[in-house]
Amino acid sequence: MIEALSAMASVFTDPYLLVLIFATTILGVIIGVLPGLGATTGAALLLPFTLTMEPVQAIAVLSTIYVSATFAGSITAILINTPGTSAAAATTFDGYPLAQKGEAGRALGIAVVSSTIGGVFSVIVLCIAAPLLARVAYEFRPPEYFALTIFGLSMLASISAGGAVKNLIGGIFGVWLSTIGAERVTAIERFMFGNYDLYEGLSFVPVFIGLFAISELLVQSKMVNRVVNAVSLKAVKLPTKEDYKKIWKTIVRSSGIGTFIGILPAEGATVASMIGYSEAKRWSKNKEEFGKGSIEGIAGAEAANNSATGGAMVPTMVLGIPGSGTTAIILVGLMVHGLRPGAYLFTEQVEKVYQIFGSMLLANLMFMAMGLYAARLFARVSLVPISILWPIVFALSVIGAYALSQSLIDVWIALIFGVIGFFARRHGFAVAPIAVGLILGEMVETNLQHSLKMYDGQWWMIFAQPLALFFLVLAFLGLCGPYLYSLIVKRKD
Image (cartoon, rainbow, N blue to C red; front, side, top):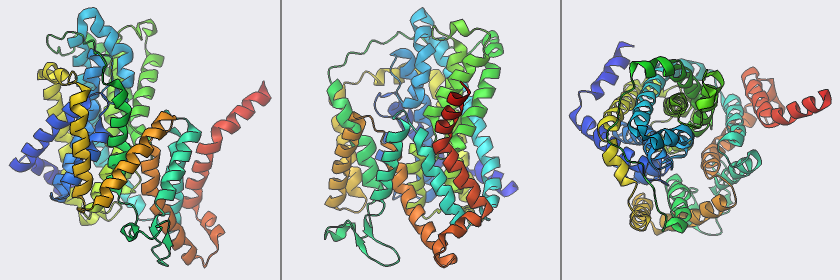
């Protein structure tokens, strides 16, 4: 434990890493306040540029983008009623009405403090829970990992607002994409159509750049002439003593809710913020203030969405199951740099793991300072015309896709998946389930093959393993539970 704490502390004494995290925090806040971008798009754009860095530096950059952009979405949510990220959508419910009353500084102060407490809380839980869960992961064999991955895929039903059926269709499409290329055991070519550039399968980086960055560009293209009405902001005000008395229970509750939601495979900050907001309203003594500028509503949403960032890193680093769309990209970064998620990561490379945790803690403290003293400056970034912003994003997307292996096929893959992502969004499908399905698809196939080898093709023996059966039952309840519950209610009625 002493070695782990010293590894975390080393982040605060490494000049290069300090400067890198500081610069990335600024970039993350800028990405977060730009409506249409966000943590996932920012991480997808930066992923190719982290490939030349050291492993700790690369993951520190991606995780810093994650936490800082998640917070920064609240700035535009409060000032222009446009959440910079989907995780800040619930913040608009009370943040913007409070700003319209002339209390924009107070609203941002509540958001900054709640976000920081939630983020720091989740990092502390991450430091404690991840090693404990890693010990449990030692008991996992191929059958358990197969069942866990099925459970992760079942959670796609609630990963976003697209609807359970559409999300599952997106996840299945992602799993199918993972089968493109030569099968690892038999080397049988699948869906290659004679193109040997696809022999190793689809590369995650260009696919993610297309799904998250280029598709967002195409969606935003119809908003070129949008006019933004911004609320004036003089200065950010820290919460008063009376404010703290009113919101401290909400912050503690939402921090716990957000961390728990983040730990669940395939959930994320958006779901956490909505639940945090609804629970804040449920337990509030002033329910009539919600929707009209309640500081409890702001605190509930912001503490929950930022605490989900640390929680989402738990299954990502311990089990290799992304806790959100952004952690799916961070997971790719881990694998590219040779940091294979799992139990051995916490025994063989524990120093690097805790340096990553320390980077997240430092990023939370840095965005607090920026939120308090530079929110007014960052808010002006949101007024950058889309006609200027998105050509820059497109250029970065193409450069990032090409930089991976200096291959034009990766550029074409990014462009193709940009179009696929655009039409998916246009018809109500979220792109995050596709990305998660692509990552988990390989795990499903590989662990199923290994399980069948263990039991000489007797697939039903998987159900004889208690832990595997537990995860499969959870997956069944997650998919069929709401339907079964509605049938029971109908029969009672």
